[in-house]
Amino acid sequence: MLDITKIEKAYELMLEASQLLQNALEQPFFEGYIENIGNIIQNYQVRTLDGVPDKQTKAQLKKLYQELQKLKLTFADWRKISQLVLLKGTVLESIQANHQLTPDSLGFLFSYLIEQLTGDQKDLVLLDNAVGMGNLMLTLLLNLSLSGKRVKGYGIDNDDTLLNIVAVNAELTQVDLQLFLQDGLQNADIESVDIVVSDLPVGYYPNDAYAQNFSVFAKEDHTYAHHLLAEKAMMYLKPGGFGLFLLPTNLLQTEQAALFEKWLRSEVYLQGVIGLPENLFKKKQIAKSIFILQKPGEQVKQQEVFATSLSSLTNVEEIKRFSLQFKTWMR
Ligand SMILES: C[S@@+](CC[C@H](N)C(=O)[O-])C[C@H]1O[C@@H](n2cnc3c(N)ncnc32)[C@H](O)[C@@H]1O
Image (cartoon, rainbow, N blue to C red):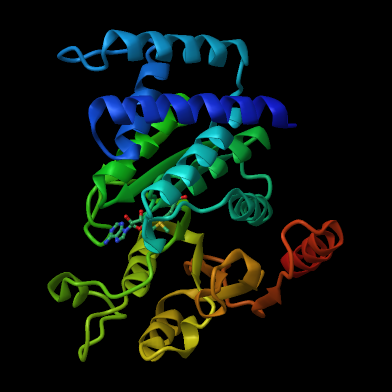
């Protein structure tokens, strides 16, 4: 169980330390965050370069680090705290919607679904090809290992600041995660994986030359990035592996839906759609659902699609109902 007071205290200390470093470096918040985690990983040493940070800031940071060390934080605590500090950062820096981290509530739901879908399979390799700040991936790696799985992850993203954030956080929480800074549509040297997950960026993909190699390619306009990245992600799966994607609820009603459906019908199985509570999203029009896809393989076939909506991710009765429904479908 998380100790809320401890988390709050650590959050305050981490926010102050990140901001001290941000000011010292004269950089955006996230650079201060990365430098701060870098210090903590190196045994709470305040690293200096060309006299930055100055003596006074260094002394302030040392004090904050002493307080932090006293809290004896677990890896799960660290992930939770880093999520809170990063959320604050996204407000301070007005980060665009497509770069926002995936909240815990969804990470826990993904984790539950993966546990159910993989049953007693002990070793799991996961991939997120739009890994961002990595909150979704780290939530999965930490939770699945707590539930007895041996997990390893791969993450791809084309934004170097976000990838630096997930890199320091992965080191801080000591998860097994290998990262690739590149476009998610380009081939990455990754073994076949058991599960792909992604909270995909929604919008148009600018490079038609890359896009034209995909089934979901739209000739008339730029192709939707989320269609392309979902198609690419499924290519990394072992036969029978699952892809869990957070995608717009209206996915199958857009201008390019026919292309996506054609790909779905010919190359993968759509096994489930879980509508998420609208209050998780700022506007009803941008509501998202979890789409569960499966790569064809031996003894794999199209099932009756599991379709449901969750009205809340915190109401115990609602979660129980959902879990029972999902288990029944699995059987
Ligand atoms: C909603 S965020 C993912 C959040 C992530 N799950 C987390 O918890 O931090 C979507 C990500 O897609 C990335 N992205 C956008 N276009 C991409 C592309 N062509 N290739 C790889 N990543 C891309 C963005 O940089 C962003 O990090």
